Image 1 (cartoon, helix red, strand yellow):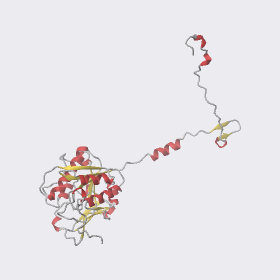
Image 2 (cartoon, one colour):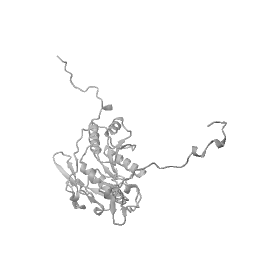
Image 3 (spheres, helix red, strand yellow):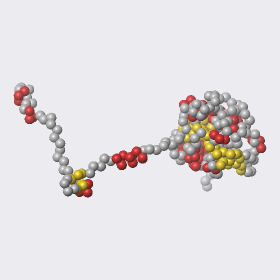
Image 4 (cartoon, helix red, strand yellow):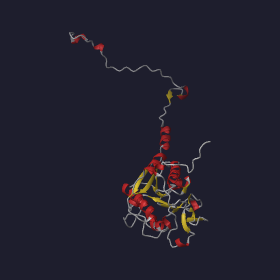
Length: 317
């Protein structure tokens, strides 16, 4: 265009705003044509069947989240226990949240183990002052319960001590729990000379009795090991849903005799066996083991590093 030109110099055919479709070569599929004597009709596929199949493919029920609570403390076998449990949880299909609770401070050694597991976790610190070592696990679990209630975490809560042994079948069965589930646990007696069974006796999924072998614990209302039950987390922060008579926070008690923490805690979750679910059907399988194996009065070296890893050094001749 020239700056000295007139408007009339621009002819109408120089610019065109008409959109001309590109030529398309249309071919009819002989099989898709319905022929009749007087006319020809093309069949039209609206894709209704394909859409219905797509809806069916995306019509799924999300899995329940499993919230695993593990109290831990400084001792010789801590790294072994945490790594072993972490490798088991790594094989559990998500969603799963591992809440590991320590006393007073989150140690560097525990944090390093948790980062390497590949499991979604929360590293929690319990600041409760306690001089009684036996109450340590109670306060640590209460710290986790308080965290769940405060953040309204939704899922199935399971107390998994780091020194127990667990099968993958157990974590699969946790997702089938509606309110409160329980199962038998195989235990090594404190004397280490026999194995005992503790937990429910079931008719299908109905709890009709209890296994117990220790005379000192026969006064308990519910004969369950700490690793032998799980419950819906909404019981902690939604009392109206479960028609709880009180909104007092649910916690484990450090004022009761040792061995009675489980039953006094469960009594806050359910009224009786009718509100429990035995799993698996008939409570016929052992899915976890409590062995009471521990090296007491021994702690791990800082950073898991040893100054000398050999007691004797022999020179090479």
